[in-house]
Amino acid sequence: LLLETAEQLSGLEIDYYIGLNYAAFKDVIDHLGGVEFEVDRVIEARGLRLEPGLQVLNGDQAFALVSFRKEPLGDIGRVQRQQRFIMALLNEAKTKPLRSLLLVFKVFWDNVDTDIELHEVAVQALKYRGIEEEDISMEIVPGSFYNYESRSYWKPDIAQTEEIIKAYFGDE
View (cartoon, rainbow, N blue to C red):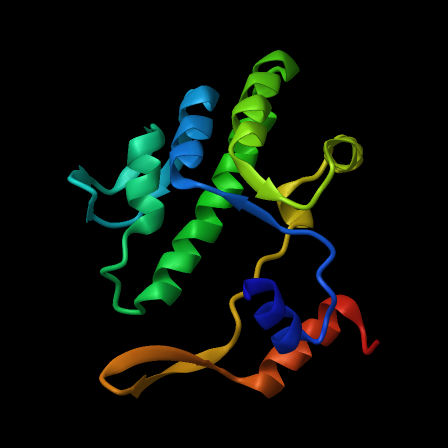
């Protein structure tokens, strides 16, 4: 349903998906030796308290960080923090020797739900091994909050979303 919804909203055919469970997320971070991240505010989640500042987060701390929801912007603020964390994770992985990354990849692969074949992952990993932060773009679907039956939802701005999609993928 998630793929169908994303395809319907974007008008694009999605080639692949990757789903990672939370336990594996924490294991990947721990096998990397943690991820250096600038915590921008006090985060209290999952029984942990993270203070502001640059620090190396272990798996439990990273999971608390990316799942924290008490934001003025709600889930939008959480997604923005998740995007920052993904960049920090990629930067951390680039500092590790290939031998240690193989163990991280095994932990990842043993816990992933995907329709990508293992050989294709290897091809893509080699293709993008020199990728830099400035080569990566992340967007949040433009929109606004609205309430329906006492629940808050994010209502996409379709026209703005179409403009972003055209900028990345063209008019086709």
